[in-house]
Structure formats: C-alpha cells, structure tokens
Length: 472
Image 1 (tube, one colour):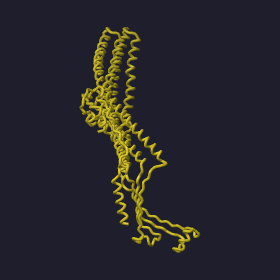
Image 2 (cartoon, rainbow, N blue to C red; image 1 turned 120 degrees about the horizontal axis):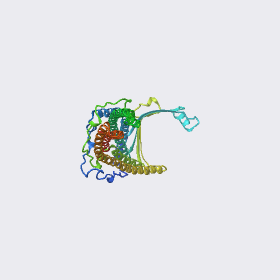
Image 3 (cartoon, helix red, strand yellow; image 1 turned 90 degrees about the horizontal axis):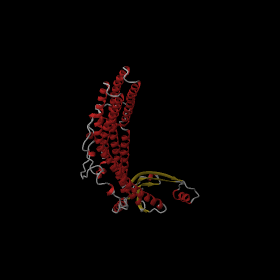
Image 4 (cartoon, one colour; image 1 turned 45 degrees about the vertical axis):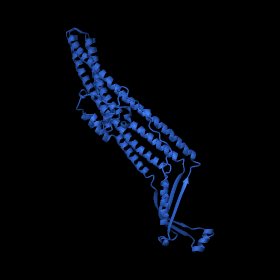
C-alpha cells in the first residue's frame, strides 16, 4: 500500500510539470477607444481629475452629506449589490480549489445472493458452503484532473473577473445614487426658492389689485382692469399648490433613495447661499478606465470573455483524469480489520477526447469568441457614452454661466421696471397693463433664475459623476 501511494504521488508530480499550456490568445482593450481630450476641455496631458475627490470633499453642504450617508447605508439597491459581491466572493473561493484533488471517504456494504442453479451460486456453495456472499469496504477515494490546457486557470481568471466586476457594479450604482441624492436636494432647494418667489409675487399682485380697485372706485379704470389684475394674481396663486406638490414628491423621492419612508427633509441652507464650484478638472479621457466604474466593468467583461474562450477552447482537447482509492475490504466482517490482508488500492489514469459531442463543444467555443467580440464593442460603447457625458457636462457648465449672467441682468431690469410701473401707475402716468405685464415678466424671470442656478449645481454634479466620482 505504501509503495502504491508513493508511485501515485510521483505520477502526479510528473503531470504537474506539463500543465497549464495556454491554448488561446487574449484580446486586449483597444488602444484607440479613447480620444486625446474631451470636447470643450483645453488640450492637456494632466491626468488630475475631479473624480479623485471623495464625495464628502466634493459636497460640502451638511444636509447633502447627511442624506448621502443615509443612502449609502440604507439604500436597498446598494445592499443588493453588496450581496452580489458576497456571492461572487464565494464563487471565486470555489474556483481557487480547481487544482486541488477531490477526496472523499466512503463506507460500502453489499450482499449478493445468486441462484443456486447459476454458475456463481454453484461455485459459492462448493467453495464457501454459503448461499450468499457479503462484501464490506471502507477507504478514501481521490479524483484529480490535470490542468494541461489551462482550463482550470481560466476558470479562476473568469471567477476573479466576475468578482471584480460585481464590485464595479456596486461602485457605479453608488456614483448614481450619490449624484441623484445631490441633484434631488438641489431641486428641492430650487422648488423652495420658487415657492418664495410665487408667494412674494402674490403679495405684489394683491397690492396692485388693491390700487386698481381704488382707481375703479374713482372712475379712473374699468372693470376690465380689475379682471386682468385678478387673473394675473391667480397665476401666482396657482403656482403655490403646484410647487408644494412638487416639493412633497421630491422629498418622497429622496426618502426612497435613502431607504426610508416618505418624510420631509431638513433644509438649513437656501439655493442662493450655495457657491458654484470653479475650475473643475476633467483630466484626460484615458483616466476614465481607472475612475469610472462602468468603464472598468466593461474592461473586466472583456477579461472574463477571454477566460471563457480559454475554457471552451480547452474543452476541445483531451482531458487527463486520475482516480485512486484505497482502504479496507473483506467479504466477512470478522476479517474487515485484519491488516494488512484486508488492505486494497486501485489507481486509474486516462485521457478523454471528445468525439461525438465535439460539434457541441466547438459551437460553445465559437459562441464564446463572438461574446468576446461583443465585449470589445461594449467597452468601446461604454467609453463613448462616458466621454460624451463628460463633454455634455463641460459645455453645460460653460454655457449656463453665460445664461445666468444675462438672466440676472434681465431680473435686475425687470425689478426696476416693476418699481417704476407701480410708481407711474399710482400717479396716473402709466397704464394698468404695463404694471401687469411687468409683474408677469418678473415672476417668470425669477423662476427661471432659480432654475438656472439649480441647473448649474446639477451640471457640476453631473461632471463629477461622469468622470467617475462618488464611489470613494
């Protein structure tokens, strides 16, 4: 038995000398997938990017930080992604055991009662004076497949890429959640600001309507003036419940993101008190593969596809399997532990080459190659989308700044126009239509100005997310 085990170990060692021959060539990430620079960004070779900042550094408002903290801790989608990582970790651990022989302990017992008129029954009765025979075995069995063509190594590579990919999926989800929470909060502040604008305008309309009614009583205007003034006042009045409705809906949306039931959200700042971030660095497009989780995930998908091609290609070649077993065997329980007489050992090694099923295996190999080509195209597409999103955010930041400048000037002009029109109207030097028109214009312009500020804050957040920020 000892000599048998020694020979088996020697055979295993000789086989491991020739294992892991690679039968397929990996495809690398295409070098031409990235442009030199983002559109709208100045030509630069600086790899520094805003995405390197941790989200707690990028977002400085304590209300937003609190909401994001809650979202990262309690968001159900993120918790599901964490479980997916845990599952991938188990699969990776399992794949790492691919080169380890499978060892099983066994205990068997059997009884055979042949016909007395059969050859076996006749011989059994004459040799042992028995009508049946019992057989008892106990031992250890070993099974091992040599990784000659690198199949097991490819399986490990595939599992490892899947594990890393699950981590990138969670990172990508977190960047989206961080972005959505901050954008939702900015939208909430904009709605608060617009609500205040509507209430302020309603008071202004009340004052104007009161003056028009005085002039009507004095016979200076007709009832049409009162009706038009009332109509203008109702526009501002209608905005108030609409904005209150949108505020509640936005708060509910933030509650879902933070994994809680609908409730009001604390606001300790106003929209106008938030300063816009300046000189946000975009870096170079090739840095996206390191920072942006979805691009990294697409790269890992190619790694995984390469491994799958290696596995399916290895299946086309012969596989070498070695099995061995040893232990105790006896046809009488009284002699079962009679050592060394009851010791037994078997060993078997053989090559298995697919024949009738080779067409099916080759089809799997061809499918794996096509899937790998798809992975390359998916990587290119992910880069294309990422670069486009960064470019969109850059142009928004630039053009919104100019729009805000002109809109601020317009609001200043209209505020002065409202003051002047009211003064002139009181003194009979302006028509009531001029007052109503000025009030309508200032309402619309102030609402637009609040929206522009929200869009600027959102554009900053979008650039941060598009560059891959938010998961650190």
